[in-house]
Length: 287
Image (cartoon, rainbow, N blue to C red; front, side, top):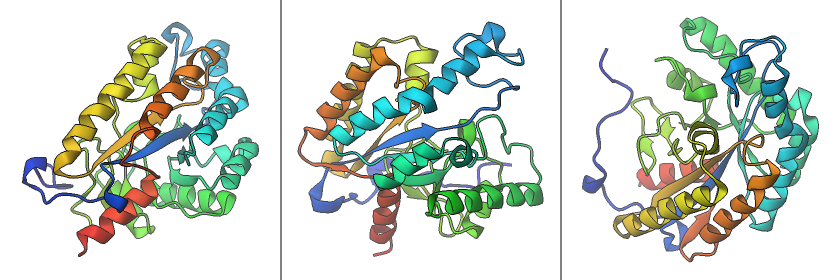
C-alpha cells in the first residue's frame, strides 16, 4: 500500500504557525525512561556480547540510567526550568518507582512508550495490538496518575493500525514520524504528529557516531540557530532526545548543561512539553 497515514504538505505553502507570546521556537526535552529485559538483546555499546544472556556489559551500561544517570540529568533540567516530556515504558513505574515519584513532584508529562524497550508491537495483529496498547496506557495512567496523551513506540515502531488504535484510547498525538519541523494532522481523526528529531538524539550522536561532548553542544546550537532563523516564516519545534544511560554519564553532563543554557538563554523560546505543543497546535488549527 502507498502511504495513507498523512498527506504531503510542503512547509513553504503553509500558513504561518504562531506560538504563545510570539515565540519562534517551541522547545521540549524528550526524556526516554526505559526498561530492558535482562535476558534479551537491547541497545548496546558493544555488540559483541549483545546476544549473551545475561549480558553484564551492555545491560549494566543501560542500567546505569535509572540508578544514577537520571538523577544527574534531573538536576540539570531543574536548573534550567525544563519539565521533561517522558517517553515512559509501562514496565518502568513498577521497577523504578522513585523516578516516577520525582517526575510527579516536577509535573513532568508522561507519554506511552510501549511496555519496555525489548518488546515491539511490529507484526502484531490488530486485536493483539489493541490489547497490548490498552494495557500500556492503563498501566501508565494507574502508576503515574496521568493518562498519557502522546505515544512514541520503542525504536519509533508502529503498525499500520497503531495511530487509529491509539485514537480509540483517547491519545492525541504520536512522535514516531520524524519528518517535519511543525506538528501536522494525520489522516486519522483526532491524531497529530509532533516533531521528534531523530538525528538530534544522544544515542544517534554519542553511540552511533561516537561524537564528543563539544560536538554535541555545537550540533545543538546549529540545530537551534537554523530553526530560529526558519521561524521568521512561522514557528518551529525543536526537540532534544535524551537517554539517562547515555547523556547521564558523568563526562557528558556538563555538555548537556551548556546546550540547554544556550537554548533557554534566547528570547522567543517557548520552553514547554510535547503535550502543550500538541494542544496549542490543535487549538490553532481548529480556528
